[in-house]
Length: 191
Image (cartoon, rainbow, N blue to C red; front, top):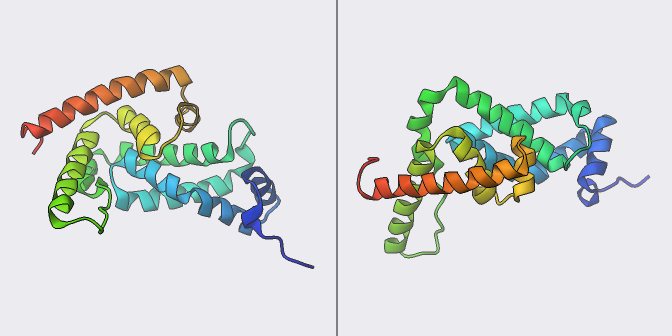
């Protein structure tokens, strides 16, 4: 009997197989969505290092609660919502660590650029990371989902458990606050 390649199955089929006890199917769901989950956790927690632990805990929790998936929205959105909830809980318990870990939130730089551009990009990314961390948690969540991860408004609404209109208005206000924080940083106020 031939073994079925789980990589060719869609998320709903993988979830059904995982519900039936197929750990390989759940492992494939984790593999597919781990990158987005890490970005969600990093944006909400403010730390790429802590994001790894948050995601691991969230996926263990998701596996234990597979039966709670109601079939509304995508499996991806459900998994990312579990991650977002774990990340929020983590932040609530460790608000003081957020500032210390802000320096880890900068994105990795490409190695194919010259030294001057490398330094300039690093400075820009560090400024954005500082500005993001200075925002309220709900601003970081919506900006992270929309622009760091690239989720649509509808997907962001599913992940954060908000109405789409709320996501749209929060995004608009959060972008304004991010711009203001970047201006303060450029003037030397967030050092």
